[in-house]
Length: 585
Image 1 (cartoon, helix red, strand yellow):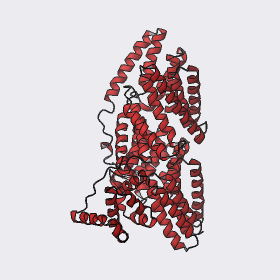
Image 2 (tube, rainbow, N blue to C red; image 1 turned 135 degrees about the vertical axis):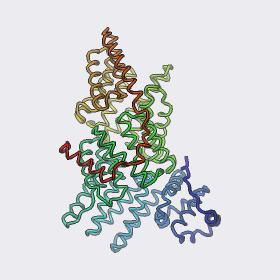
Image 3 (cartoon, one colour; image 1 turned 60 degrees about the vertical axis):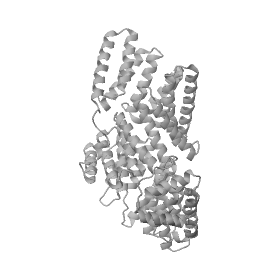
């Protein structure tokens, strides 16, 4: 799917002149390159509009031409359109540019420092664009070439440049799930920081610590991620680029969510969304980044309906900027698939969720290798959806086929997670829990019990006894004991434990309580304890009334159109609350 065109309406006479130049493109090609960058870009955009992608590709594959076009900063969203169209057309412009830049860096290795500095600046802009567009491997190649140039001069300016390069390199390696290399990149950045410190110089560490927080979050090292998000927040100062501030607020919010510090998370992510919209505009990819993290917050505080709306808004922006076959679009599809699955869980209508899950997998497999870690979560989401569709299916043959497909997807996801994170990790535990649910649907009860127990043990050791993830697995094991293994005493204890955690974290109106309450009603019916049946019918009725009142008015997007606090006030409020609570674990 081609990117949706945003408004681009130059004055009529100007537009006519651009069209005339494009009509004579072959003769005018060299002259076009001498035009100012904004006019030169408009000529190329007209080529894109006319579908002349081969000619556009021949221009953009030349490093000098593309580097000049990148200077037209106010056209960046339109440049993403052109670039994505070329990639979709089969023109490997990202890898061609990365290779050309790498070769140039090797040619100028013996040149003076000024030549290298100019090349590094070009590399930062080129690598930044490729990173923003989701072509992480090519961006990594560009930043590695920049880093190599930085190491050729052991002087202060190049130490600063090396730190900046490491931050950018860490970002693309995080995006491409190269976490081991990311850790090495952070250590390298620290060595340059130490060099600067010994000479009485300091580089701002906000972006670096924010990227480390993102890496630790991705690896499910939540305590460490939370610790480093605090350090990143301490580094936010006046004059810092808005992009850096927004990204630190986003990462800090996510770290707070998984630590169940929801009030802090809400304040941080709402301000990040406001800042991104105010500074970059409502159609900018950075705004969509903040919306995805806002959706994550809403989903985790049980505001599921609003999270679906926010994820849809983020997907719409990314599709309008990048088009279809882009990794940023894939991740938005996946997030929307999962939130839609949760939202429609009780209704059993999973068509929309399945569509987005399959779109995510289709895009990722088109762009990345079949064993890429990004596929693990997308396959997991699709497997969860297929399992629910199978359960509601009245055709035994179709049911078995869907369950087997879900099984294959879960196993593939588990293997990818174990390869990346090892056995003792929250992500791995989630996959064990998912397999446990699937085995229950496949009537393999002993295997289901084994998977659930394994998931609970890992989660308890990593997250503690009263975490949301633990409650999920405990509730699933209770369901297995109750509905299929007749272990009612064990099931009752587990249901009550799951309910206690859910109410403590989310309150009396938490959506997940419904399944525990219904489970207890069935359990007490089975053992003939009708007094308890009556009690939990009343509790469930009260819960339904509470759900009807909850989140019925608030529009999550309207809620972030303004910010009651300045960035400085948001940062100080967060840091003061940390100081009041004492050191984090």
